[in-house]
Image (tube, rainbow, N blue to C red; front, side, top):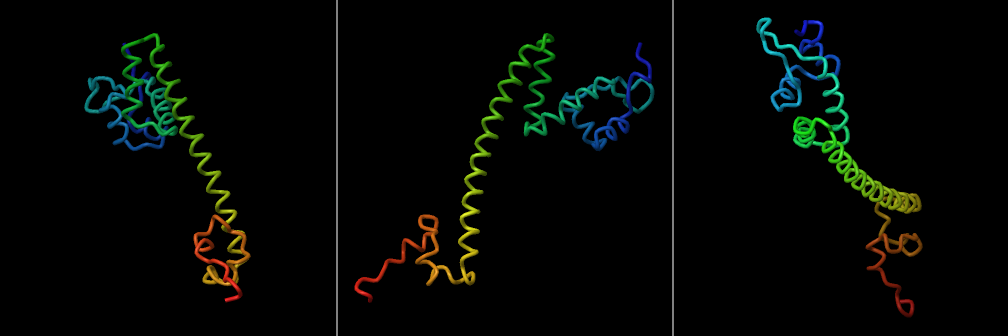
Length: 158
């Protein structure tokens, strides 16, 4: 038989993880947390194993997984107590997330180069409105500037 010391009040869990009691109840409603029967009155108590569950939920949410995706892992553990199917799904999910993060890094690096180029152009400008203008001929923006394509050198000095 479990004693009160084996379980936690909702306030204890919520303060441990910086969550609201409402969030704890919502996680329980989704099946992510387990509570004991309310035999000791109107207050539900949560077995200590929920600490591990909440740590895992926060970790997976930090990696961008939705509560629905996280629920899949919890459901798999219930179906396969060995944890092998859950481990395989988690590994696949992590690999997919790594690919997405690598793509974001490449996009960020490209934006960084563009911003560095634009900063160099702005440093060379006299004012915000001097481009396009006399500065365009030698600003070095080249393909980065749509206006440089519109400006064509005058023929025969005209």
